[in-house]
Length: 403
Ligand code: GLY
Image (cartoon, rainbow, N blue to C red; front, side):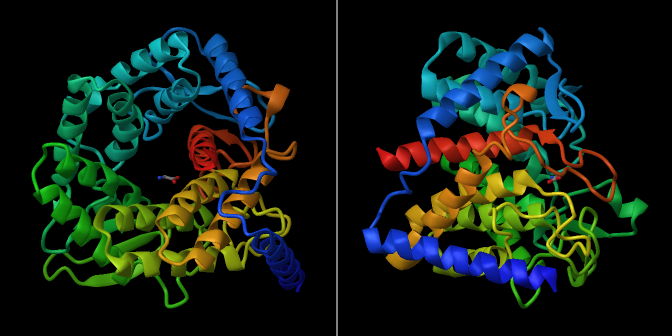
């Protein structure tokens, strides 16, 4: 019952804030967020992190709620690209040469990933596009471009043409008896394939990404637009077998970060293909997410956790969704919807930029209250590098939209 009342309050608050912006005829994000102040805050936190982590190739991944020191991981961790990515985004804003040096250093630490065999899973897209992809975008260094192309080639080897999707987790085939599994997070890693096909790579990368997106659209969602975490397929005829979860509360729940990955992923697929079917689909899954958000615009880690409102939040999901919504608002063909998504993204960023969600002087991360893996029992109510990465990406997008 409490959940219903919260949702109703939220819908009223959402409609009111929407009305105010429409009444002002705003075509840009709201002016309520002091984006320069938030970007300076991120830069300060990055300098704190640099001072804390020392000079190795270990990457800061997360800080537990009661801790103030980064838990460091090696380059093979799935999140290893986010720290160099954060440095590149700070450099983009500040043109600070010291930050650029660090960005180059941490990016180049990842070089073995682009070469080593065999490829463990789909995460190479996260690792390489946020590091080498941003590095190439900001320096034009052809060697970086080569690393991204090599990584796209590696990822493409996980594609199964019988199924029409990438095998996300090869090591779960035996362990879980999932003959071919495709997780919703994998939507994010289609971007490196689209990127490769536009940057001198084979046309096959585009086809793989498109097929994967189509099949995921058809099978990884329920009628109401909520996503399954894992879609399991057979490898003989490529048939969809079932939708299950690994990181959500149960197989029929809407895991918040999974839905956020889907929103971001389908928005990106629409950007790359201009196929309106993907635009309409992105709207459907975003609207499903927005419908049930709590009043502060930051979801609980799983929308169906029976402990809500006492369940942990996931600020990383909010950061991913905010960044995606800012992009979608600029791609929209319907101005009313564009405004709706701009307002929603602004609300999320304002909330994430408040004292409730920023770490400030308690720890060197940007954000608090992210949930990494609740069923796995780790990184619950923590600071996590991908929450920070997408928060900073969203602030950068917001700033560009104001210009
Ligand atoms: N891709 C893993 C996660 O979102 O936790």
